[in-house]
Length: 405
Image (cartoon, rainbow, N blue to C red; front, side, top):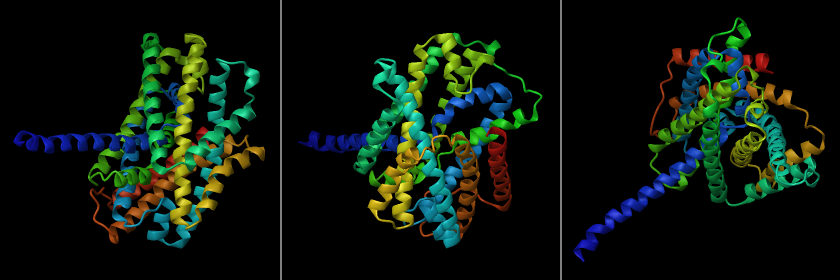
């Protein structure tokens, strides 16, 4: 009896540790699934154009900026007693005009972004389907509606089902990155990598905005915190969750960039996959389409859930109206023949990162003055850091808008 009594706390501790591990994994997967989107396929081409040395320097600099901004948003979440999304935090700390401005940018950007994600995911899914079955069975419009229906059912499911599905998809996404890297590794040659900077000034500056946009996952921070609360994880783990999610995404990007550029060299195409098909054959199309499909679908689910929660919590809309706009919005836009808006979305997406980051800095400054709660961690924000980051964010938005689009 004594032996059993002594063993019980150990078993409980082990069980609790396993639950904590998987719970943290779900929160990290939320960040990874948001950060890694369809834009990953443009990164090797950008690196090839700007050179690896220039791109890697920008990558490290942007990574520091991104980690800071995400931790800053995390501190805002921890300092506030109520649950919001970024528009709600803007209204709570900066007033109604800031909230209305955030609502306009959030609604427009995310509505059109969901349409683009739906179209891209449908393209990847159609490529996968016609690789194994007759192409006449899967016209594009049919694939769009089928995928929209599946994603809508997932969004209408219970919250824990959504996080678990995203967790599984994010794991598959990381696994596919590793598999693709291993497949490409035997074809890697240092001579194919453009190591040295080009003469073009635009090419020197190009990677900054691209990496900033590619690594931005601010929308997932409140969702990750919600998982932390539901799973009753210590608030101190939130910092580790944020940093881990960003670093895992960054590692996947670096692996993908190096292996693609090292394999295809100057023949690297803007979407990466076609250039690789010349080297590895049509099989890489299937692997790349699977990777692209998972990257886009995970982002779609998290973005849709984010804007739905913003409608519910920040603007106090009814669940019916919130679900209606988020679920039917992309499909309505599709049937309005707004599928040719990639340039508009690139413009809005480029501006979004700079605008969101600026709002985070302004909100954090105010939140430090009148916190509701004591946060588990804090990030420094003196006048020098504030001005430096503000200039960098505005520059990144302009570079992404006028050099990439």
